Image (cartoon, rainbow, N blue to C red; front, side, top):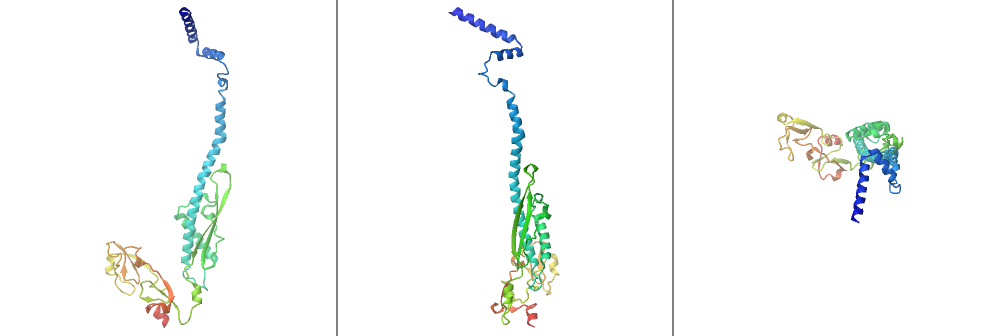
Length: 302
């Protein structure tokens, strides 16, 4: 038995030596001839994976890229809507302030207000860095023709279209309409119609000691100017009075200060409460014994 096993081992080593002496091509040929196709079923189908990868590159990859572009496009749409809302609010408030001097008999026409609204909207879009490239026609493609500016309110309706950024997704566009509303700065006209001759409407401020019959009185309409601190030594207001430091902000040492034409204080900050006016419209009988303004009250009484 040991001799037979040794003989088989020698025969096996001889076969391995013969195979090793063959070229790689003959070794592969012999392997293919001896191998069973049941054991290696993919040996003659090695070209199929390459065809599958090519199919994925041609069909699946463009679809995936288009989907990602459309997904990112949705975020751009949200950004355009947010910036458009800010620009509409800015334009409506700008128009509301411009209507301050309107009266019931003398009102701006719809065409004039639309032109002012269009200019204010374009300025608002520039300041908010709105990506107008996605809008069809860019900033000029935003229409305000459906706005309502005839009443006491400014109602701006912006109509525009956003186009798809990729041609593979088609040439479709999405239509959007956004609205912003602000009330004109004209007061309550219904109160003026209900006016009694014996009890007229006047204007006061929270900390003022007089009442005003004219809403455009110089004491109510602040004209703020920036001047140097050194010029305060010789500078006088419209009533020839000197400027004293404001109790709230005038104690700091800024080189530039702010004054008004009829004020008696200079301010170091534009956000100071002394540079703001909160105006109330009340009946003359509700003034609580306040005196008439020397500018508008006495003139109206005479």
